[in-house]
Amino acid sequence: MSTHFSPIRCFETILAPRWLAQKGCPLIQHQAQQTMKFSSTFALSMLVGSASAFSPASPIQKAINRASFSSVAVEMGEKPVFDQEQFIQESKDMRLKHLEEQAMYALKISAENYGNAVFPNAMIAGDLVITDLLGRMGYLKDGKVKVMVVDTFHLFPETMEFLKKIEDHYGFKAEVFCAEGIPVGDKDAFDKRYGADLWKEDIDEYDRVCKVEPFQRGLKTLGTDCMINGRTRWQGFERAWIDLFENAPIGGGLAKCNPIAYWTLEDTFDYFAKHKVPYHPLHEKGYPSIGDAKDTIPIPEDGSVKFVNYEWEGDKTQWLDYATERKGRFVGLANKDGSTKTECGIHVEGAERTWDRDLWEADKSSVKKVDSSDAALEVVKSGKPAVMVVYAPWCQFSQNMEEEFESFAGATDLDVFSYRGDEDREFVQANLNTQSFPTVNVIKPDGTVVKYESEERTVDAFKKFVEETL
Image (cartoon, rainbow, N blue to C red; front, side, top):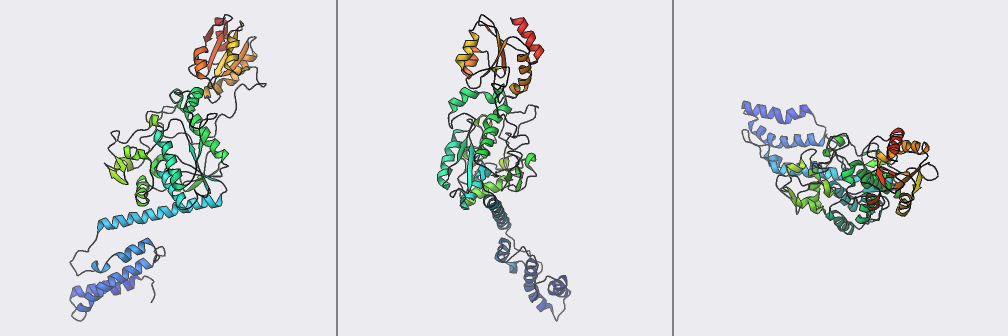
């Protein structure tokens, strides 16, 4: 028997008997009633069978097999029996199963087709789905995919504690990276070198120092050729068109795998519930997404929506509507152009433009390098007039004035010095008038240190200030 679906055959088996029965034909009325019960089921099965995607083993075919089509093909005038809630749940189950298989296929390509796939894990909802998928595939225990974590020194305490939990659960050890020159976990050292309020002074530089630079350094250190990440189209218009694979705008254009690109946030929590995945404890306190403690809040702020023991409390739509996942992130922060901040800088064009050298490098500059606080005090107490800039090499304002200050040093008879102040903030605050970078000081013969207050950083402006001060 041919399984090809034919509209003519459909008429012969379903419509014609039904029509004749309605007309009251005495010869076939009884036969038509019996035929309709059988033929409705047969014709639908032919329709389903004609679609190659509906293989006998597919979830759709199984769902159809479970349905009672005999209850659908009822006597004329009766309403069909239909369990709507069961249909919705089975549809969601089929969708999630497809998404899982699709994501695992993308992860397999990342792990098997590239030599050094790396997964930067921020332990947000999507990242934990990927963590579990990688664990199920065996790529975490065998080290086929390396896990990288960036500690900004401003994370919630629960975040790094949770990292230890998932390391134990899945049997891997993450590589942790933080601000350049700072030991992992040493917040005091970070504050001393970069300042506890760097994010308030210059949010772009904070992103560069605490996120972008260690992120890139991590990728480079691990020899990454394929970066796995948890971005999704559901997270907002900036990401609305991402695909499963793309080229990253960082690290020289390495491959970028977005295995859950087509998932919604609801899909991730459905996955948690289905597989009992370890999730960040702050989901139970009302946080849909987790970033820095300084600018991340619950949604809504009263914490009335939570995900506790794999079940929802409160109105989950406040978390799950389109583009609301990151609604509680970057709160109160703005870009330099005044626009609302929605990205930390890692996934945007130009992210690779970070500082990778010192300013006014020794033996290459007319500006003399001061390499310690003791040496700086010697300049102050020397009894000779001088000019000293206190700077940070990562600071874009310091970078922007490098060339002009170099020209000034070549145009004056005074000694001109540079001192890297971000490595000893307490000293420069107490002795060199420095609250932000760069700070230019004129040092008088009596040891008085006078700060240049103007934002005009030109050769002529520096010359004029020196003449007025000395």
